[in-house]
Length: 266
Image 1: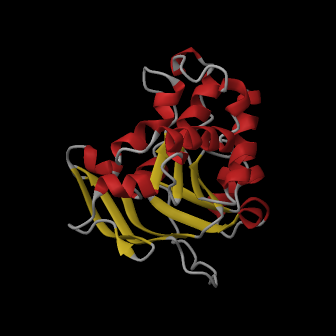
Image 2: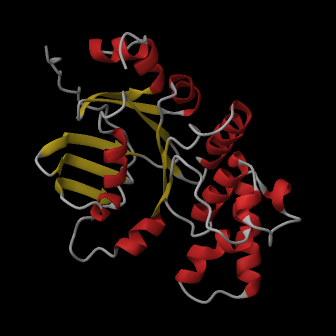
């Protein structure tokens, strides 16, 4: 029997305007509706966790926030997503510029097959011709922000592929940070890593939220409860519940949320 999906409650009003606001977002892969009218807002200097079972739509939704779904054939999207009040699906939107403002880190570490230095400066070089001094400063600053500078400072011109998985992922995060985005999207960034590397990245993300808005897809309930300020629970393409993380984990309003958090399904 198909599970009945309850509509999500209205979000509590927040004084500051959202940096990203999505309204009635629907997405189809061909004729399959993967997102069914998602309303979510994200505010500066917060970590928001998107949780839910596999195939529930959370990664699909994440990719709507910087138009990565544009790269998938047969996708249809309706609704509105704004970044600082600007419609990102407007025909006038430069998607390259958008993806610099809304950077993305993927599940598997994906450094380019060249040096650590050239990985971190890749986006900066695409955007113009920065001086060597500007590049050097960006490399050190972003690698420090990504908590990997001490590990790699003496081998910046060695291949990034020679690093451990956790170090590779932090270099990928540094590559995103180097272009100074407003928002960082992370799609299960620690799922391929060992517990120590995962913990290092969690600590780094908590530090980064002082300067960035972070939106994180995770299957790890402990991770979501530890580091996020807000949590959104997705199920079968619907947003079931969105609230501060403490409420979601300790006093959810929806039975589906309680069942998932308690491990009854998923």
